[in-house]
Image (cartoon, rainbow over all chains, first blue to last red; front, side, top):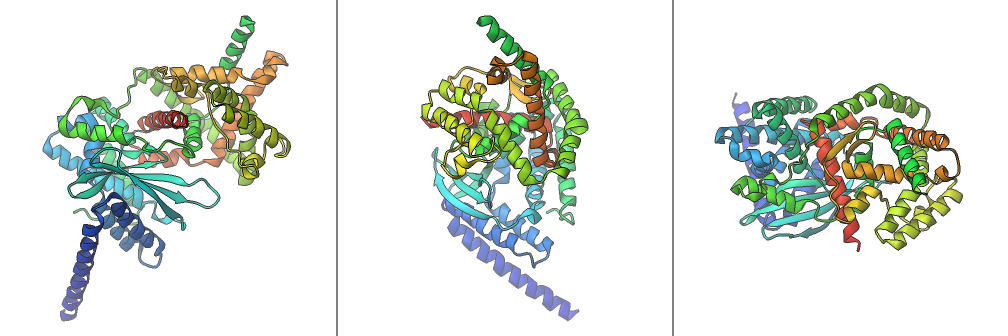
Length: 213
Length: 273
């Protein structure tokens, strides 16, 4: 009993230290767009390479990492486009929750596909005040690199990711078109159901579905 | 003379309908080809507009949502193409993948690509990119001879001559002519009215058609497209499974990917001036 308590206290201390360290790092890094992206990608690559730790731990670490760098509320707003204004606050919250899970699980379901690719940080550009784009390449042997660009918006003073492009295809614009069609043809409730079903199918592939917070 | 052109365009149209290509062949092929030289700053301003719109509700409210006046027809053709892929193309491609190893299939892909030099040459020329057009001629010459009928690409590997992919649909966009509404073609997949015209125009640029009877050039053209489609699909056997896993509405996903890809391609062409 006591031993159990000591164990959990110990774990608590270690976790707290880790969170504080991560927060301190984020506070420094998120002052500029390139720092935010590097602060996301570099640790993520470390987690991906670490195939000794249990898969669940790695997934959870990645999840926390992504939540620190990505503005899921902004992503959700952007993905609903013109429909955002027609929905209630409760619907906004529900959608943000489901879409966040969906996006996280999309990426986490690909963990085991990682086979040692390197990431090249090309440059950061600021096309409009308050908006930035960070250009990266995923280098793969014997093939064209995949261009992954991160679009960031400044919420003073920190920068948060609100879209990612893969070979210049905007992921959020792609979902916006899908969601627009589903809402127009079948309504918002159907979109929520469909999105939840897809997310659960992805989560099932992660090994074990994760608990919601 | 004019009569001859009409016949050739009609032939190309017939080839188009006779040929089997996957619904996403054009979209996904051009996604890959465009990746190498796509324009910087992709769709950042468009997205920024959509983000602002959702916050403040200004005039940019429709940003990033595709229009689709032909949706009922397009959705039917989309379903048709998916079935066609299920029953014909995917089985054929899987069977072919079992007997031909990947390097062979990649070489076959290069072969098909090499013979389609004329539309690339012509459209580079139409957009006044003379060095690129010349490069296409040089590439064809090198790859057809040293590269053994185009199965290999020494022009790129030894001489550093990159391919400059181009088509008539891009030429139309290049001169800022609207390409009309989104259109899903049977066999060919995502397109627009303008791109469909471009497809026929590019198809009419078949040098063989000047020398042999129309039915030989027609069946060769169809055979070539069928072969190209099967070969491409064999290298991407899980294409739709993959796409469907991450899509809530596959039709909408393909439509948007097509429109973003075409917009990126023409932006890249214009930025090279």
